Amino acid sequence: EAQVTQNPRYLITVTGKKLTVTCSQNMNHEYMSWYRQDPGLGLRQIYYSMNVEVTDKGDVPEGYKVSRKEKRNFPLILESPSPNQTSLYFCASSLKPGGLLKAFFGQGTRLTVV
Amino acid sequence: AQSVTQLDSQVPVFEEAPVELRCNYSSSVSVYLFWYVQYPNQGLQLLLKYLSGSTLVESINGFEAEFNKSQTSFHLRKPSVHISDTAEYFCAVTPDNQGGKLIFGQGTELSVKP
Image (cartoon, rainbow over all chains, first blue to last red; front, side, top):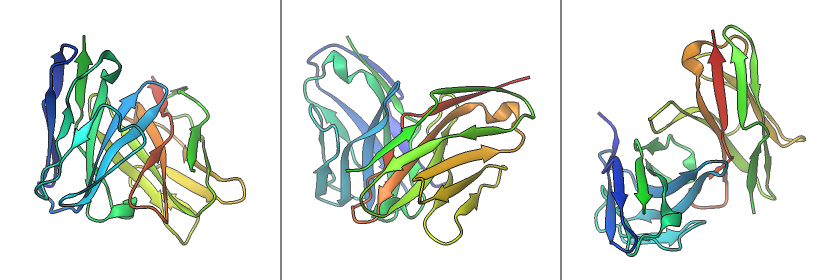
């Protein structure tokens, strides 16, 4: 089954404690991206990757890092989480950039930073 | 820069009534347009998209959207809603000259009541 898998689904952590949210897709997609969803703001892109070892900032990259060492995985790293990073996070992938083909979304990771 | 505005944050409606969810966008370049749906506790799913050709696009579950270039709108409509249509709906655009970025509106929460 074609899917994008995020882990964990729920996470509560403390300020400053490094964490990683994993994202994996099994469709051999080139393009992957991370979004955060906040009430009244919709989804905003954090980082994206056009292919292995090719990543770039989205609209709200501050406080986040990503890596793309292999095609299927695109982890989101919070080196020193802060309460303003409390949000719902989605990973997405598509065969090609541009959204022309269907983008697949993970089920989301609800992060709370206290 | 591009932006997407969904004019209603919440739309309550009775079952079997018609509904319209409004979406306007702003862009200096051509864009492709999408509607995504997010059911409770799930990720986003593509509902329909406009890439080119006929300005009226339809989904398999009875929704349709019409691209109006002069009014820069892409409103979503359904003539008769069901309880199962209760979800949050996101309008999104992708500029045709950028590498895959989806720009989302703020979301509209559709609540269908019996």
